[in-house]
Image (tube, rainbow, N blue to C red):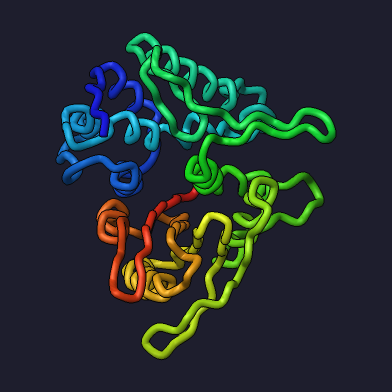
Length: 306
């Protein structure tokens, strides 16, 4: 684990670009891995103070938390405005894309002035350290796109990018039917489509041995990697309180499958109903071993894009 002190100016600049209510930003900080309870402070200073606490905690990877906090802002620009009421009335209104670009450039400059650099996918490094591998676009027919260095890196990019991938499908061109992502099947289909160019053997709904007298099917099995992906979409507050228990049962099922050495649990929580995502992650992640089998569990909670 690598803790790096975060300068006050960096913490303040990040606080400037975070939008939302106390509840939504509390959930964002908890999902990002910020330690402790939210500071009991006014909106203007609360987020800066909490981020400073991250940089002062030796048990926290401060750059990872920082990257998680600003990933959505940095990677998801606003949609191009087609005009507002003010425009029709002859009143000049700010262009949201132009305003966003100014705010993003300011944050980038402050990060770099203090020795940090941001990379797509929520990755922040200290300048001078090896840069993370970026996914290069495919150039021309038959060309092979540059892949991330590991499967873990690829899956993290795809999973963290789910809200961004949804945007052009939800906000489609005029006359095209918009897509909705209101069920687990919708999330599974999108995830499947995003993985297919990179992973040749993906087996949806693979049968799993029974546990406690019941059978189940995996959402996805990647047999070449001994890896299972299980998806959940949080429907409401009542379901949010049950997701952890559902995954515990799933873990017990998957432990018994000979090709399930690794389990990735993807929880899509668009309305931020999970009040303590970090606590859920801490409870579920890690190696689960019994005489019947061992499985390594990883949990990612993904919120909706702005």
